[in-house]
Image (cartoon, rainbow, N blue to C red; front, side):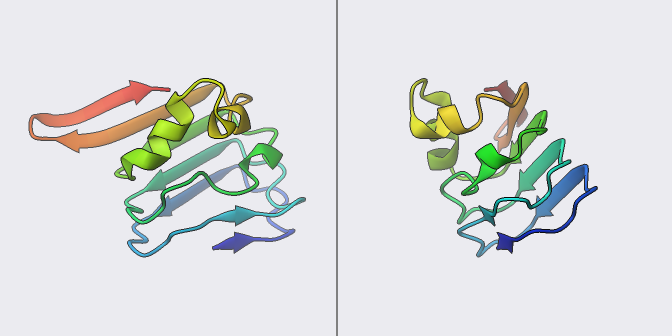
Length: 106
């Protein structure tokens, strides 16, 4: 999935239930006003969206039902993934467990 220039006023984006999605690319100039991004049920997405650091107004980032490899890259302080989202004030990982839903702030 590639986001090129456009969506100039888009503030919120939900990417949900793309079971075969394995890559998201955000090109320079795409979605400059985006403040919230929610990625859910994308189990083949094993890395952060390429170019997420270009979303300078992004304040909230939610991950639900995504691979652990994606989340581990954000958790690891000093990693390239962690540095790509350091400007985001609220990053939340939600996952379903045997006892219900679990929430973690990253």
